[in-house]
Image (cartoon, rainbow, N blue to C red; front, side, top):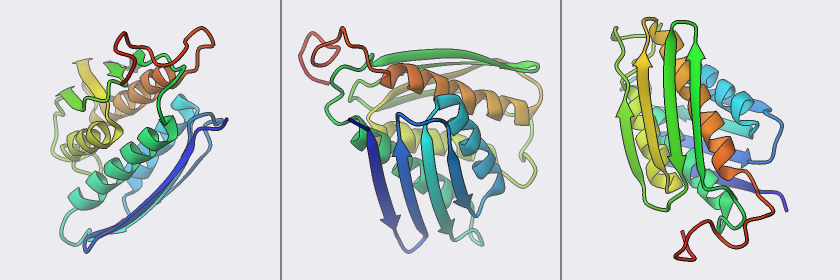
Length: 195
């Protein structure tokens, strides 16, 4: 059984299409109007071993906020749909990822209770042409629509690009562990019998 999903979202501000295969090989086809976001999502695919297609455009003349958030919304929905009832999956995942001088830790619970703890500070207002404060909005949308408890913590770092890369790689690796199937698990990994 392959765990795949497709989500489309069209508003007055954006148009986004996302397809994911949780049991992929890390293949990425990312085409948004934001090159830095494309780069981060490509890293996410490779390190999560997810096959991911994202097509997105939006009202960037206003701000990148709408498109970044809506991609997070669609990706979260796609992950949630691909997981279905979450039967036989590990549920929890964690990762500690260095990127040169930066170190990021991430912990994920496929709890069904959306929550984001985001302790990441960037030194500058821009990474190239990208506002890194929008990454919090992306991960908030991902956690909310993916029904994830998501903790992202920067231990230390200097270079903002390295910090952002470490965040996306760590989220991908933690998510890969959380969605991994385990043949010893029957039903869901909860004493309640549901997530």
